[in-house]
Length: 282
Ligand SMILES: [Zn+2]
Ligand SMILES: [Zn+2]
Image 1 (tube, rainbow, N blue to C red):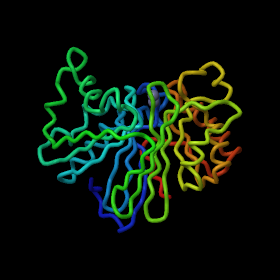
Image 2 (image 1 turned 45 degrees about the vertical axis):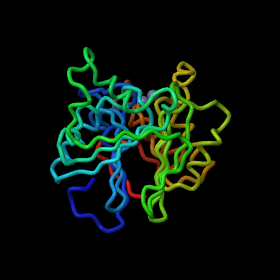
Image 3 (image 1 turned 60 degrees about the vertical axis):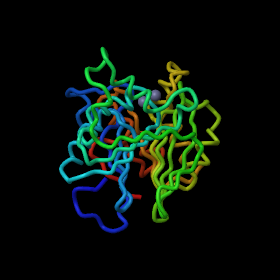
């Protein structure tokens, strides 16, 4: 995947195209943070990646088609609808000459990512079949916990995280820096997740499932999500440089999100609340 603008040789960044959890929320109330569901673009020099295929993927796809043939790797945290419902609307997948590789780490041995995305695009839920995609479509299932060597200087570490039907968290390392993407996951109050702590140790950017506040969480135990306060606790314990609040509750409008931004800044100065269009460099 090439970026439309010329890139400095070792440019490493993450751009947020969708920051919501559960369901997209268009309309006037969440306009400053954005209403699209999970989708990140990560660029490591010449290599480009996409993490999750929520509704934010549609606009990212439209951007990518402007700059010629594409070689795109999409890594899914999991296949709940809010993380895949942009996939049928990803324009590069319909153009011959593009190569799209979709990876998931939570489905084996019961099914495959090809099978699950095929269900998403099947009648009468969706009018066209996945087979209509004219790009060279490749589907890859791995086991969360594996480390994937993408190239000589790009490493992708993966771990399984607790979420209904499973999910995968990622740490991408490039040029001595790292970005961690950890959503969707549920914590146990009073006990930091050792697997996540190991993954995010000393990372530069830690993007975390912050669907709820600690106060709200008591009502949503077992729903598979976490809180921004738990993200702060993990960040402090693991020596994270920048903590990023992500996977916002669709009921958290701009005013509520501004309040969370103020609270997180007090608790861990320098933290960031993800919004659509935001670009962060480690
Ligand atoms: Zn989600
Ligand atoms: Zn989920």
